[in-house]
Image (tube, rainbow over all chains, first blue to last red; front, side):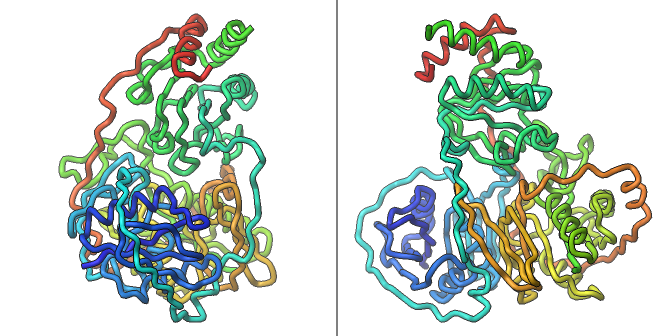
Length: 301
Length: 251
């Protein structure tokens, strides 16, 4: 049996999450091949690298190319595109698709539910199995060996190209992005108002970080959704995360699992966030955060 | 334009996951329920499209009889009617769910011009029901949509890619899956909630199918198994915090 890995890359450099998917596939199957689009990525440790000749991103066309290789096992990273392309490929091949798998052995898989707050042990019944690998569920193990590169032009149906990217619009603000910031200071309902975020902005600025928020805050209209950390918001992985007045609902915690250290500021010592935080300060956010910025200013003076 | 929105009833889980004794579901006796977040935005988006250009919004769900509550919530946001595909509340896999939805959509008297899903459900997160439905109906689909506009009988949809947006233009009829953030759902008024109580809900019982993605059991992942180190209480803790920041090399 062969596992076919859909590899995502930028200008030939393989994405970190696709390297994790390749590692996962090598653990799952003895024989691993890869398929890529838009150029030839620097993939090693696979027998054959199929390179599909399709211009631009068209999810259904990419899935058609994968299906045309008649795979029995398809693996991809649990990214937007990984999940999208594999779902299309599953629909085309009559395959069974499990998203965000953390472990697999034959038909038995363990996959994430609730953004990783819950795991599901499941069985896959089908001749074609498709799996995406949950981000950071597998540590990358490099494997040597140059693959045989095989370019191919898949036979597409007209319908496969109806939904395709026709334009890319840059929306970056030039500043530090929430997903990549080394420090994130987030506010929850405990901040009390949109105005309450001013002191969080100040602290984040002093620490070279950005401000985030919980879903409750977005729903109240205090902050834009682009600031939201969580299962349905942005997934962050800062060196330090400072949730202020955030109780720690599973929806929120699914977005900050990648944080290296967590300092919670909360009035409730029994809040669920205390079981995940490394450090805590108990009390009113609106008194504590300005005191921290004042102390920072004092020691820096 | 007829817009059909597919929604899912999910529990409001709060801070901790507790499972039922058979480990096949979350213990929900003390929990409330809601429309899965992406889909609530899907309802709002559908209602805005119809408010701007005319037409009607229908909301469709597969779930237990109690899912009527989420259909009424969607109708309070502005959907006109609802269809409930009743189950016994057990977990349906993505393929069986998609098949039941397809059958229900085909049975619609007025075929929807646009079908809206959430990108993935909050609970099972299968990332595929919308795509499977689109394939079965032979319609184009755009997923993860963060901005949507109807322009000359076609859709313009934007998908978020890092700090950029990928733009798609697809003809109608079409399917989209949306993500939270595409809009901020309105807070329904009391009269809207009262009107929703009188709107029609059709109930049908779909035929199930053996799951091919078969859930065996659920497992709560092990936590960090520790309690936070308390640096202090109130503003007096500030020096200890700054000391920690210095230790971490951040301040």
